Length: 414
Image (tube, rainbow, N blue to C red; front, side):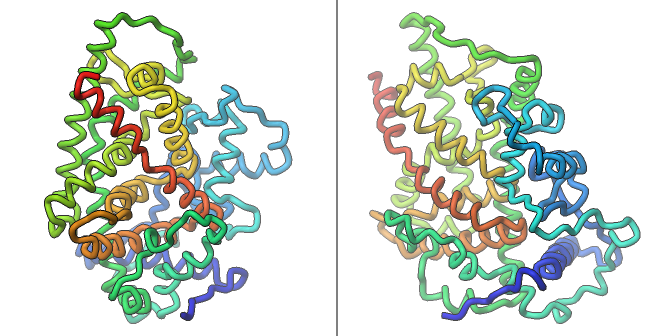
């Protein structure tokens, strides 16, 4: 099967400009503002989440992280982690606290002196008239650059991972060949709509944790030190377990809302939905609360006074399960995924494993669309080959079966 190849040296910059322009065109089409002008929106910095000013060293970053990366090219060997964990949170107000973790974040995001340096776009060039951007002005090669899932899959270089069944990640269905070879504008619009709807749902189901995240960051900014080996009597432990189970019930309701709102999942049979929910219960929970995993600890509030930190996690679920969960979460966080990517991971995870279902075909079809939407988003965000390889390894760790068994025992009073 033929793959579309991009000459990185000659065409990379032009292709990326085309991608940004096309995204602007789609946003304009959805908003139906035919006479309005649209500005380039670089979103947030991929390193510290501050406002990005342009494409610097191949990645959307703020001016501060651009300068930090340039200065660190010759100094990074001297950097040491402030907390000796190499998992410090990089935020606008505290990005200067740990240079090693900030440097690692730059590398993980894909910053490189060999990458395209588009730089900040002058104000005089930041506006595009949507009337000048039409579908017939966009050659097929630009759409292929955005859409080529096959090309990305080829670049993943994951053959050495013998445990991977590639059909689980890029499923082959009766529609795959024609869909991947078709570079029509309708497909791009489908991907964009799936992304926007997934992001809307994800936003609604995570907004409750924003206050908790702000609380956690405020604590960390005041030289927070973890309290370890706190003693709890049996009555207190029983109360914490009850609060934990109450929280899991609210998460179950959230999962039902997600499955009922995500496009495509309404056609899944009820018994299959139950299996999908159980199989991905804690995977989706980690995505919903991923911002509360900070500095090798957990800042989820079970009530106004009880924080489910790592110590309590160990008491409730056991050290082995807790260590596995935290390892998975921090590997996922190291990818520095933006909100749109995280939101698309939800339907991707929910549809990726289809064994032991009454109707596996329907779930494979759903997964096909969300997989392509996710890869499209990665392509727009210029994710590197190294990023893709690391992502696959993280996905393999997402099955947290022992958690389910442990919680079932808790629910039974064990």
